[in-house]
Every structure is written in C-alpha cells, then in structure tokens.
Image (tube, rainbow, N blue to C red):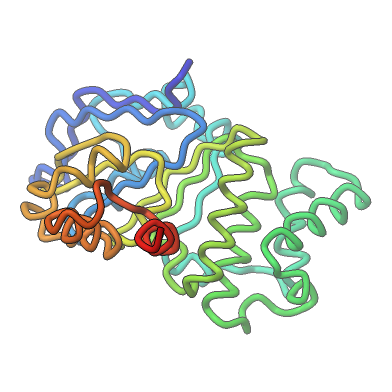
Length: 269
C-alpha cells in the first residue's frame, strides 16, 4: 500500500454547521506532507477526525485500517501526535519520567528504556533537560519534550498540529532534519498541520485547505506554481518562493528556489 491515509466523501457537522462536505483526501506513505490553511479552514477538525476524537459519516482508512471507536487503542500504537499547547498535560516530575512512561506501558526493561530515552534526547538536543520538571521549562523546550515523547514509541505516523510554533528557525530546522532522517531510515510518515507558509518549505507534498475544502494537493513545486490558490486563501507565498518569482520576471533566474543559500550561489556563478 502506497498511501497511509485515505478519506473519501467524508462529511462532518458541528451541530447544524457543515464543516466538511464530501471531502476526498489521500496522503502518501513515507513523506512529509503539510496541510496548510488559515484559521477556520478546518485543519484542527480534520486532525480530530483522524485521531478518532470526532466521527464523520464515512470511514477513514489509516494504514489499511478503518478508524472506529473499537480500534482506537490499536490506532494509537501506530500514531504519534503533538498539538498546540499540549505541554499543559505533563504529569511527571522529570522529563526522563515523562519520556519513559510510554515505554513502561509497553513493558520495556529499565535498560531498554534508558537506552531509548538517551537516544531520542540526544537527537533532539534535550539531554540536559532530563532531570528537570517539564512543567517549569520554557515553551520551546516543552514542545521538544512533547515531540520526543511522540517519537520514542517509533510510530509509523506522526501528526503535528501547530505543535512546533515556539521553536526558533535554527531549532526547527534541526528538528526537521531529525524527522526527515526517520522518514528515510524508519519509514515514518509526517503529517504537519500549520498556517505558517514558511514551514511548508520543509514538505514533500502540500495540501491547501480553505473553507473546509481541498483547493490543491501536490508536490510543493506544483503547489507553489499555482499563485492563484494563494490569492484565494489570502496566504502569502513563502518569502524565497515570492522572491524567486520576482527574479524570474526580470529573467535573472529560471526556477523557484527553496534555499536562499543556493539562490545566492547560483546568482554569483
């Protein structure tokens, strides 16, 4: 199976308000897919449907499994998820205990737990936080702890719903490098929900939601070529893409660039 997620003719209402009407959506395995949309576009509702918190009138197929209330425990073994403001839910007194808890539930030995906590904390540069109380950390560090807790189970799918907003650009890029390494080596699939167009640059594929509908779905190269979609949604193109298009207008370059460094190097050749 090449797809990790399939929705077909999904409809959903809050009370009498129609949120999704016959929504079709397919997300490929082992890719970084961004679901991009402004506030009110339906992103958070879609996340809740995928996580089984809400139920629509069509079946959602997740990695070949139909999501139902009966198999939610099985779903949660496949999925790691981090949400905006999730750090309000820490329950342990140290970061180590917070990260160890999901492994203890799987009956890992103390030695295995220590090894896995060490590995994930080193990869995300949070080893120095392990003895600290997660509730006393600054917001960006709390987001990293949330991410480590989601990844330590080695999920097949990672869902991020505005869960990395507090990270500075350098830290976020380091995190994305970790995720892309896991996509490559551990066959992780990342589904990243955000309103931040700059973050969509990290994607393989982009889905643009607007007014609870999919306006476009394709590779980032394809999506960025369709400027009309961004005009309709009142979303700006990422800065480097907008600059690329302006320089193309003056025949200074002949393609969209995703890296300022590469653009500058090519211009200086």
